[in-house]
Each structure stands twice: as structure tokens, then as C-alpha cells.
Amino acid sequence: MREALDPWNFVIAAFAIGIGGTLAMVAWSWLTMRRAEARRDATRQDRAREL
Amino acid sequence: MHRLANPARFLRIARWLTPAFLLSGLVLAGLALGWGLTRVAPDHLMGETVRILFIHVPAAWLGMAGWMTIAGASLAELAWRHPLAGIAARAAAVPGAVFTAICLATGSIWGRPTWGTWWVWDGRLTSMLVLLFLYFGYIALADAAAKQGEGRARVAAIFGLVGAINVPIINRSVVWWNSLHQPPSITMGGSSIDASYLVPLLAATLGSSLIFAGVVLARMRALLADQQAEARLRRKAMAAA
Image (tube, rainbow over all chains, first blue to last red; front, side, top):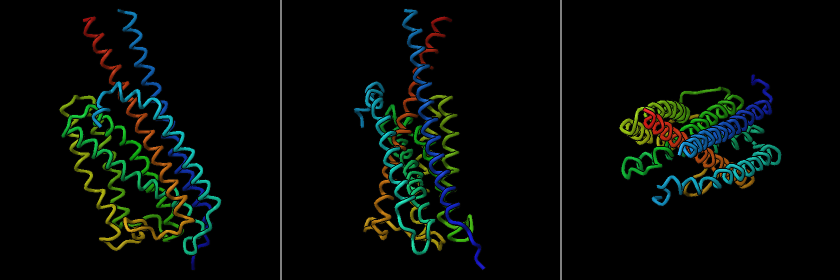
């Protein structure tokens, strides 16, 4: 006897993982980039002040 | 390619290309997934679960394309000592691993109602899982190499090249071995997928590829900025000593 599985539960779970994972990766990469560039710019300004 | 070897020139181009790739990719992938979720008719065999393929197929393509990016960049690093190649390879590793993990998870979710099981140890699924572990190994090796200097970076580049052998194995696995996984639907000779599925599938794949490119550029910019900040701090410490 086949189990009665609601296919929409699987569709929603797959979309949540795919979209959630992609958006989290985009946000993390963007924030990491902004932080790294702000840190570089801060060291550049320190250097300029010293000179 | 060699015109981009200058980090300053690369950063000038990447500054506007990063948001352009990310925004266009998010819009295109969003529209394609929305279309696939609400407008496409259920398949006569798979039913509603066919919609999972609009997430699963682009993720599978980018999992493999991510490793080919690592392999290509590693070759450029080893053969031509391209100054940005090692950074490009490192930047592609995390998005490649994320898309491989999404491919495995969504494939497993699709398999439960369609095949009646979450997982089988066949050629396609196992070689894709091996790819995920290769990504983990590469990320750990490249991070350790970056902390220990240029000589160690060659080890990560060689690992990136050798690991590429797994990509054709993934691609041909459904032809070489018996598998629950279906044989290739899109080949050089054409597609066996109906246009009503193929168009949103290709749009979702193109959108996801633009997102991948935008994430790689963002991560390259972060790695370059870290290197520049570290170099300045080192110079400052040496001047103070």
C-alpha cells in the first residue's frame, strides 16, 4: 500500500532550503565584503594620518 | 584575462559588477522560481514535486561549475602565476559548497515522494556527496595555506586540479552505472524536456549563475581587502619596531 504523502510539503521544504540557503550566502558574503573593505579603508586612513 | 591581473583594475570593475550580478541574478531567479512554483502544470509522472527541479537542477549545475572554477583558477595560478587566480579559487569554494549542499538536500526531499526513499548509494548521489567533502577539504586546505604563505598555496591549487576528476564522474555516473537517478535530459544534442518546463528551468539556472558570479566577486573583494589591510598592519608593526 502506498503512503499518502502531500507533495506540497516536500515542494515547500525544498524551496525554503534552496531560497533560504542562497539568500543567507548572499547576505553573509556581502556583509563580509563590506566589513573587510571598511577595515582596509580604516588602516589606509591611519597610514595617511601618520604621514 | 591578464588585463585583470592588476588588483586595482579588477577592483574598479568588480565594484559595479558585484551588485549588478547579484541584483539581476536575484530578480531573474526569483521570477523563474515564482513561475515554476505557480504557473507550471504538474508533471504526469512526478506530479507537483516536479517543481523541486527548478531549485535542484541549477544547484547541481553550480556545484559542478564551482569546482571547475576552482580547477581553472588553480591552473592559472600554477601555470601563469596569475596574481588573482588563487583568490578566485578560494572565493568560489564556499558558494560551490553551498550549492552542492542545496542540490543534495533538495534531491533527497524530491526522492522521498518520487522514489520512496530519502537516499540511495548509487553513482550520482554518492559522487555528488564526494564533491561536497572535496569542497570541505579544499576550504580547510586553502584557509590554512593562506595563513602560512605562498608555498602552501600551491598545495591547495594542486588539490583543486586533482579534485576536478570527480566532475566528469558525476556527469557520466548515470550512464556508466545503474541508477535510480534519471539519465541526462539536456545534452549537446538537445533537450528532452518540454518547453513549458525548460524555459523557467534555464531562467532559474541563468539567475542562479549570476548570483554565484556576484558572490564570487564579493568574496574576492573581501579576500583582497583582508590582504591589503594585513599588509598595511605588518608594515606599521615593522616601522614601529
